[in-house]
Length: 196
Image 1 (cartoon, rainbow, N blue to C red):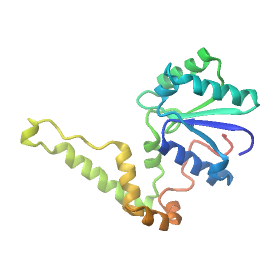
Image 2: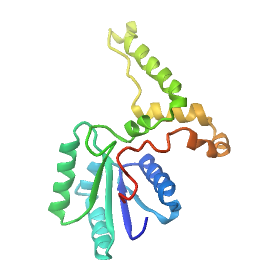
Image 3: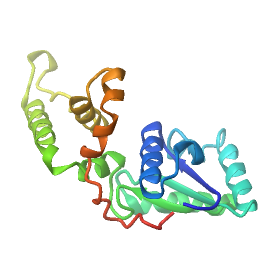
């Protein structure tokens, strides 16, 4: 990865993923990568906070750099894309846009991570799927027949990592080399080599 790139993401998990992906693909250490956490796409476009992002994007462009916006598509990829592109046009900022999980469908970072789970570890996710199905079918009398809340996708991914890496910071540090076994190395099917 060469040149002056500024990458804008929604949250800390996105930042860690992008830093690790860039490090893996281009052997760039995280300290050399400029990733800005916006705390959500709406926050980047909000009147009280947007000027910081607009100014950073303009500085990057003025310096001959490239702005990359990598956000979740959420429920409607094309609607989200149009909303972000319109914001950029309205504010006179240029950027490349990629919407997770694959730049054309609905979803988020967690959907991408679930797609690239190492097949040898799939049994952990199958177990979680069974758990979710069981939760959906439980009706507690004090909830008046209302279904229980199924945990968010983020919880599913964090649980996967915790089950395989351990709960404590010490365990996670000791198993750092094991992370490569958690996800398939070559399953990012959207052609990320050379995209940035």
